[in-house]
Image (tube, helix red, strand yellow):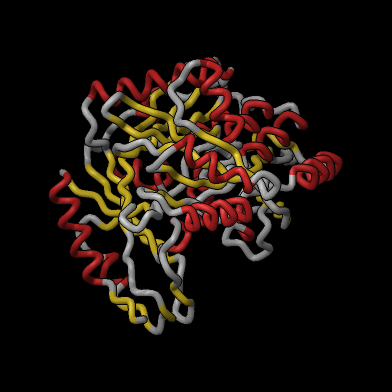
Length: 410
């Protein structure tokens, strides 16, 4: 009897957030293809086929796709989850005739400038905004006068709040400097400057199945420290503390926008802010969330398996509603430890912390010998700690005990 050739599933990105996805895909009896710009990424040895390609290099991904097909590799799905590469995902899927949202939509939502213009076009509330490049940065004084304070400067095509800062009071030199930084970190080499909304921030994750049916996956509260102007995400809370009516409003807004721009397949993830006038969209994407949200936080609190649902969808298969049901009814928190800037000389207590009540997951981005710099964006935090409890108070107590067990010497 001749063994049947395996079917393969392509995961774009080979970082720690892709590890749970690989495990879920393997359970569906697929072998793995991984592409990542880091030749020594953590997922390299998890895939029979690995290629060191920058996640944003679409042309090289398509070349690699052709090479795999020519070898007889049967690719049945492609997915970007927890990594900012939906455009690469959709272009590869279209090239291979695999199920996916369109690459035009991925390009639209992955560029803040285009997305803001589209929201105005379809009548969704949007802040005052302008796009700046090195060519028109001399128009900044008049743009600031038009937008007014408070305002926020952002990159147009990057992640982790790089090149992002809030200005609550007039500070032309500061705004000018941050616009230049945002231009530098954006792949598009553009910066976005816009009026600032006030309110609590939330992740709204939704999914369209193979039949185009809209599914409400989850809403997570995002906690920020914005006291220094930088948008530092200090924690996540799941389930959300918003009222049922507020959450329903967010889900309805997500569905409306998704329908308006033509999404009928796969993830539609929104960052929203709950203002006194209702929910407002900060940005959206057509990939699953990062930040350990759908990978660890939500499963710890609810048992929901969004990774499996999205993987099945990416292969053109339906999924049962049970994958998106809350079977645990717990509370999960994600927080970090924030040591003073400097070189790390010692880290103690991690193994002790892992044995404490409510521990779910810990990931250190920094190690002994690494240097902690000033916290100006979300990429500079040292670690992620996820805990759970039967209720919010218990989860907070568990988090405090686990954080107290870990000692970082700088």
